[in-house]
Image (tube, rainbow, N blue to C red):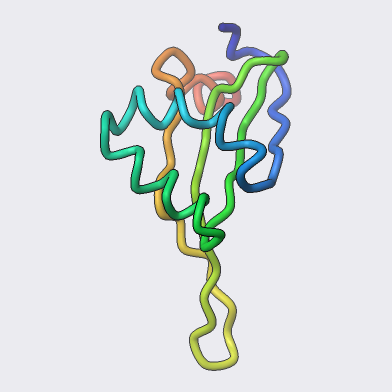
Length: 92
């Protein structure tokens, strides 16, 4: 897995969960299944970070309305261990 390069972020739901699942499982262990349930039940969405064709990060999130304000709640977020801090260090 190469962490150097431009980051592409894909937004979707069930169709991206297969690619996001391994990253979430590596980071959260069996608790990733709660993130999967949020997506499977249509409550949440998936953001998948890709660098050089490899999935390097994933987030599960959902939106809520608080009065007239729409908020994004990040339910789970994980970055492949090899890539943690890679972008911060590269841009320092």
